[in-house]
Image (cartoon, rainbow, N blue to C red; front, side, top):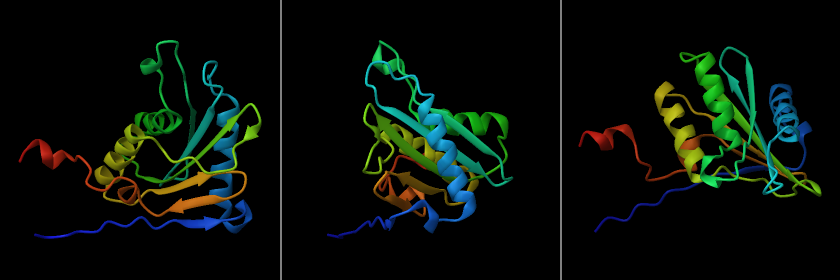
Length: 161
């Protein structure tokens, strides 16, 4: 028998000012995107912003639908938007934040499983880590690469084994 251990390392910050100017801009754009989310059913607005290697930012937000499975998360909206505009440019980082009727939530929200898979595919596609910045009003959690969010992931090699 072999035992394996997978770790996720989270760096926690108490303020956006502890991050780089570029990361602060990324967070600001994610917050603006959250304000424009279409979430009439859940009232849970999520915003995300992706930073590409060429310095461009691409924001997105959650888009709900009365038929719930037809909606799309902010992370995938921003990632697909960035990839559609610049298919050959690597993603450096993504910031994610959420708000409800009481304002921005206190605890950072991690991406759902589907979003983790999309982020991981992008990370693997370009063979470069994507920093994940999860923003809450009380703290910010940063993970240096998506693979830490999705250990034992389904990957393209699984299709051919």
